Length: 160
Image (cartoon, rainbow, N blue to C red; front, top):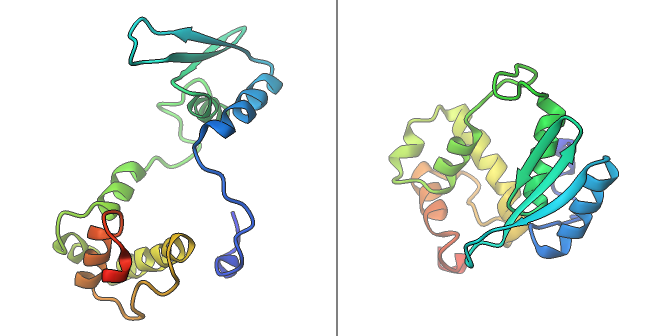
């Protein structure tokens, strides 16, 4: 990962989950030696699942990017991925979700000053990437941070 002092430099690459990445994902999976199949679904509203097979392993994803992600999970954690201790398990999904979709400003009152400052610092990086710089005031309060987090995905941030 990049050093912290590089976060304000010009962005050099942006890749998003889109169909123009699917062939690259499939190419990477194939280059790892997997046989790849699409198993169509009987339901019209569901396309089907992509399967990657090796002699002793099967990986299934609803699109090529998910399939590559699942293979990456296995490559990092191995066959005993649920109980693996290579990395310290954290409920990052829940933590990230609760910050991005707070119920009220009190959600941020539960954080220590250090935790809150870290979140604000990280979100400055995010907002500077996707919006205009300095969308968060220099000494943002928990209430102001909640207001930004509550509407940044719903409205024009110019109104904040």
